[in-house]
Image: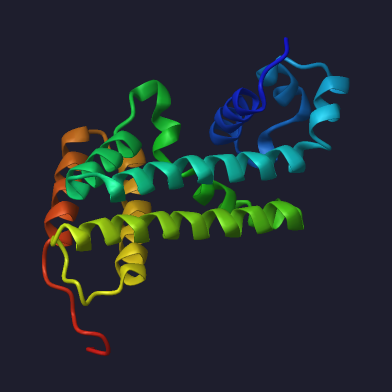
Length: 197
């Protein structure tokens, strides 16, 4: 079957998300993408090349969603919606509560240089996306105009990573909803002055 590049990357993303880079075999990839080896190697030079493209594809999707949240007329509501969609997944998709990028970081030493670079760039895009959300929150008057967007973006990214781990382990989604609401309240609170200890 012939798939468009985006559809192939979506299918490969699911596979790598479920199994990780190291545990995914070329046979797994062939089955997931419904491709014969010759067709697969005509599109991707190997597992590492496909993984590199998957990481970039995943980061672009997240960045696009964060940019939309930052540009939303209610960026706080859009940020909350993003968090809920990413963190509260049904039981059969529980593996998606963990971040694909963080899973890849755990296998960092198994990746080739191209995949490592793609992973680093993807983490930068995630930070960039959260900084865009911070800009939207500043424009809406939700956070103080004097707080640097990059600083808020970094804090949001750290919170997001922590919440992903909590969501993966949670037995009760209401606890994750509570933590998301706490994050939304914290966003509206005061920030320490630059240089304050």
